[in-house]
Image (cartoon, one colour):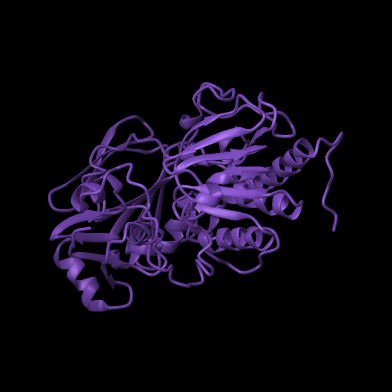
Length: 421
């Protein structure tokens, strides 16, 4: 592989920085990391370039802001479908990846017939793997991007039952995966291209070959739609941000807007008040979930605007103004220094299934109360099915139910067998 000069400007606790670094490591690309939250000189270098966010990656002198896989592939001369290198550099042992949990697909994995395969290694898939492996099922977890799921890029979790301390989503997810591995589950990193559930032994097609399984759990999670606000993509990293942990320090004593209708937006707005002169919170619709606004309502730095939407983001080298549609459906133009976006609209990543199982009009897999699909031996849960609210604890519960249902199917039991001890 040809040599490239790659510099990654990062911040401590930045989930998107981890995605960039993982991508480069997985493809054998050497890079220099410059942590802007630890070294002021790197922070100043970014501001001199009018870059107000991390990650910022220089590839042979060309700048890529955020995690943009297509641009990385293009600048590094990689194919979009290029498999992960067979023998990547030894994974760094860190708190986030203590044992190098995910391994490349090898010939043994392709030769074995697994009792239970979960497609997706998020909270649903990891929980399913815990229960399946503990139930003595030969278990495999497949995930194409273990650090890129919804939970993995959540910067703080404080409400997961039994976990009293605050921790990042990636730390919580790694604990789940490590627990499943302790019980004997195997983890591989690869992309599922297609599936064939027609026979008793299910087939899962990867770039490396075919995985065979007696039962399958679809736990792929959900992804954000591609539609963006006018100007959002243009100014990402130049005033448009998605993570206060990563970028708040760039807006010391400045005016920012926060846009969202969920608990994450409220929490991020509160974090930004520690840095910014003014935080304008725009709530486009009704607040979702159990959200408490009282702390923000009593904060003199915060201005709350209900039923206000952002129509456009404007600037030259960086964000300067936003066009707002107010609660009277009138346009306003506000002068701001940055905007943080936390908009919903997640959709299940189930397109690869095609017609293998029944899905509804939005792509959610249709299941019964035991998370069984219309195909015997195939189950689905977490954000791959329609749930009343998307939470890690709900996905984890789905994984447990699906694994117990799969154990019943594989061992041809008349009823579910709970794991009491």
